[in-house]
Length: 205
Ligand SMILES: [Zn+2]
Ligand SMILES: [Zn+2]
Image (cartoon, rainbow, N blue to C red; front, side, top):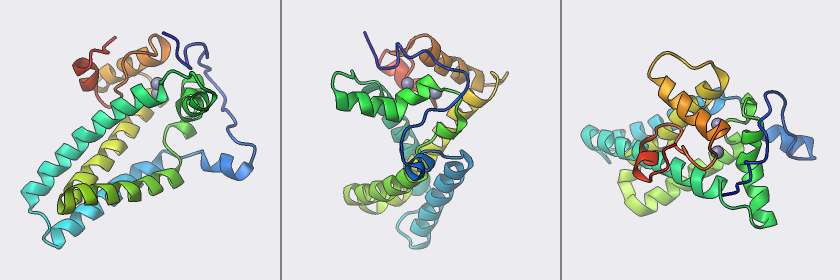
């Protein structure tokens, strides 16, 4: 199986320029502290508002939050496997896979490209909340916080994996799992925040 990233040898240093325009280029760089603050604060504010307005009981909010976290981890797996690593058989697909993800495979240690640009993040958060609200009404006040906190957890794990040496605690499994995806098998080990979906969909290395 050929993938975009198979023939791009990972570089230990440096950063890819993605846009000619300095302004657009600046927007593609994200300090990890920004999303790691933005998502939990936004999520917990939404949940607090839902509780305060009496849309949800505390128990229901916690249950929906956990479903939201689990749903995010499934979306994380599916997007990584089927969008970021789709067969780049057209010019458009090639551009998408490279700019969104191939660049991370080429420069896995570029810490400013480990999260989506904040403008995209904020836009998607608004879109997502609207979609969840249409789909599940008041339950969105518990589900959406779980979903975005799941994204923040994924970012945290991904950052730890790329920025630090393998730790000696429970994160070590995740470190090894994602290392295999980068340096051995681009078509396996798609889960970053957990290997759960790799077990279920049989893409364990
Ligand atoms: Zn990948
Ligand atoms: Zn990575």
